[in-house]
Amino acid sequence: MVNRFSTLERVGNIICWHILDANEQHVAVAQEDSQAMALLRRFLSNLIPQSYHILVNGSPVAEIHQNFNPFVLHLRIDFSLDARRSLDRRLGLALASILGTLEGRQD
Image (cartoon, rainbow, N blue to C red; front, side, top):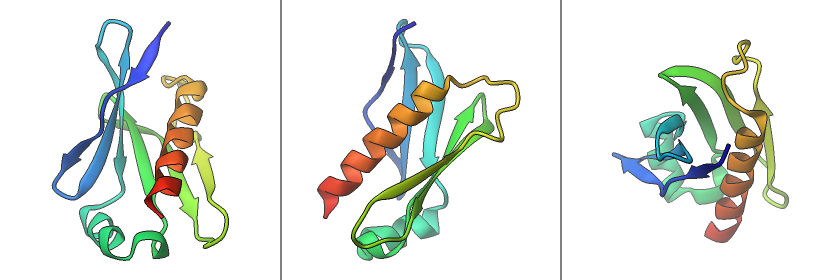
């Protein structure tokens, strides 16, 4: 199974990442927690930690939270919402890795 992350999409101020399979079919989407927090993050960059929700068919399956630390990027991934294991854990880890890399480039 080959999956890829499509280019990011902005819905208002919220950033969304789409996870696609080898046939370009939608597998999951990761989106920022709220529009208000996303807007604040654009102005106060690293002062407000990021949070993303990963959804499969509209149902939450995982959350990625950034812990506030001005010196080290620390992301926490919670898969406890996905009791049926509908999302491959490797995809969640890959997404967190991409988000961490992009966050590091914004500073």
